[in-house]
Image 1 (cartoon, rainbow, N blue to C red):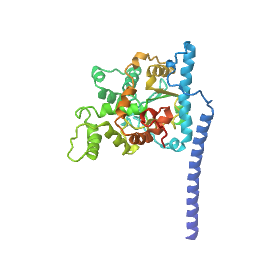
Image 2: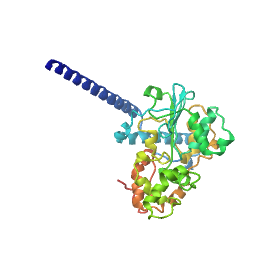
Image 3: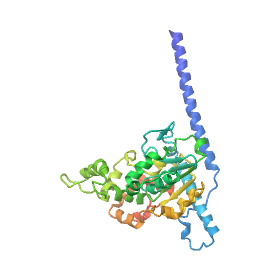
Image 4: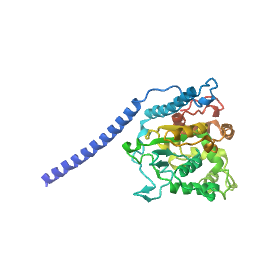
Length: 353
């Protein structure tokens, strides 16, 4: 018995040691890959938000170089921020999902599978609700030669459902490194607070009949919590919406207001291009030209962001303490993509811990 027990113990020790060795190897390989990718990049000029606003630049070639520097600086900023937060960079590394398996359709929520892939055009595009997602899906249906009938053109919800089924979608970490490097990887962002106001106007200011799901799942429960008993459950206010965000775990957020970093995993996926909705009519054509697809600016005329001045009006009704709490939730998005909170703070003190 003693001999058998010792043999069994040795086998256990050997198995545990082997598994630990495999895990350490995987962590080391991942760290080396990230180190090599980061250190092959040269530091770039300070970020410029919109080179076209620089009236001192007149030569087209010079302007194009300024845009190139702007796009490269966006990528560099993400890499620099991700390097400071390795915990975020390593999260959910095993999350793998797709709405196509072995050529057959399977169901995959867009929250889990937010990346549209086109094998022929080697495109990998992480789309986000309230960041021109309707225009993006229309564009991908168009370049995939999938017709859009009049019903889909006039019904945004029906369009999204049809596109979600027709287009191949995957999770950001679906492909191994050797495969994903073949693709030109794109994601688009906008000011996080502009996106929140856009989501609020679309999903909270619409009537109960238009968006019953959001009233049942979010707005009615919030109004019952924050309003005196017996108060009418009409429409949630923007300060109440902010209260909900600051009292809810990020993992329970709807995809319309989930942070960019939690959706597209820019610390895990080395995106080739990061566009901004604020410069959409230059960024979209530029990005798609990289893979030989013409995308004239007028195609993206509807891909405009909520006016920033309107966002400031909505936030004027929110106490500064609540704005700071909200910022702490979206802080990584602000840092990754170079947005500021300063103008939202009545005190003018943008130091937020």
